[in-house]
Amino acid sequence: SYVVTQPPSVSVAPGKTASITCGGNNIGSKSVHWYQQKPGQAPVAVIYSDDNRPSGIPERFSGSNSGNTATLTISRVEAGDEADYYCQVWDSSSDQGVFGGGTKLTVL
Amino acid sequence: QVQLVQSGAEVKMPGASVKVSCKTSGYTFTHSAIHWVRQAPGQGLEWMGWIIPGNGKTRYSENFQDRITFIRDTSASTVYMELSSLRSEDTAVYYCARGFYIAAAATNWFDYWGQGTLVTVSS
Figure 1 (cartoon, each protein chain N blue to C red):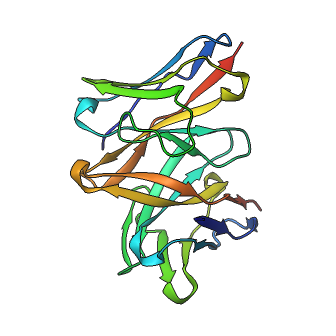
Figure 2 (cartoon, one colour):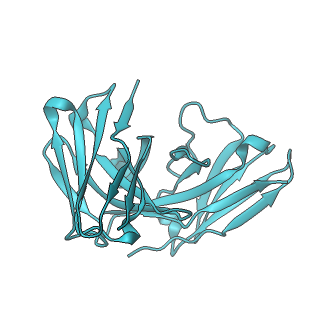
Figure 3 (cartoon, each protein chain N blue to C red):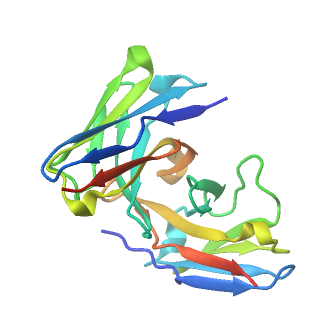
């Protein structure tokens, strides 16, 4: 089955830009979705289909996807962005959902 | 507004079964698949499968193929997930999530989530 890989952790200073990657074989040919999960809470979608923001998600959140890497970018990072972030794709060959292992974003 | 409300926490013995409910509201129940995702303590998200409430069709992750069952009650706009032969590794928070299918990209993402149900398997 398809595998997607994320770095375990990313650190960023407030006001700076954070980039979280999601790697997979030719992932650029798939649609990548991103979720934010804060402790004790359910995940919330922040990006769908590579670069689309659901209603209510700040413009500071953006996404891109090309080749073997998809990227979630958070601009002007705030303390409230500290959370775990998961990428997700749909493996159409097996008709199953696939999540990355998650990346813990720490705001210094 | 769209809501998915799950049943409360459960404690089960190894070998037992558990049934978690996910009651939906705020949209047409039969129009969207419901997916189940679990998260073991301190671990990441794991997709378990989906059910299409409109026709009852299901698809299970190969990791749970012979232990999991999804059913729906259209009169109550509710989906149920039953996991059998529980073992300690099944201790996790179980989430239901509404699937948003994008045909042009042959993809699903999850736009609304339940609050999660903690299932603890312990003797």
